[in-house]
Length: 259
Image (cartoon, rainbow, N blue to C red; front, top):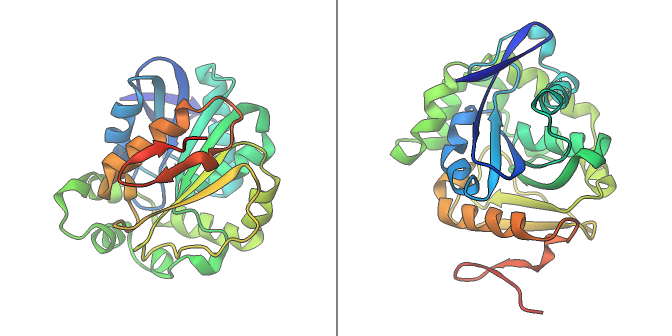
């Protein structure tokens, strides 16, 4: 287990591989742990990092740090301490929100974005995320699927207040406007059967953004359709820096569109 200190508090992270940096940010249910398989695949070409945000996993629990602004600061200081000047960000749920806000504020530090199950308004979020315990939420979202035990494993470590505070913060943020202002390539990925985050109805996406739906997934497509998710991410990371991801499409497998 690796850790750094931010504001004299422990922040846990893991790292694999060598190459261009990719940072994975978890959602409201679980921790860094459910990224393991994706990290192992991506680490063949990249240096992959996954960290636990304030209130999750093995990062310190401190109520004063749970606002989205402080989660942004955590990512900023983490990159500074790791010597990362620019990285690809892969975020899920809460991690997707943090990734988009970070890309808006620090575009020079973000090469590309892949955000999964990211809500663009508070109305997209199922109320159960604020009313149930983290362990109850894990049971609801993953059921008895052994492939998703990594979600349940660290759910018990989550401070419920870390969920409610960050979700309440979304009431004051217009993420659709944020997306329009972000000028780095961005994939928006959603599980067609997600019961935690409703699928968005986004119109007039900016040219740098591209939406993908995983037909056989719920809230965790990186686990439920792992081979497709990993292939999509690998193809996205292989694109030249600054190239829009609209050429990526889903057929029988992830392929580059022939021009």
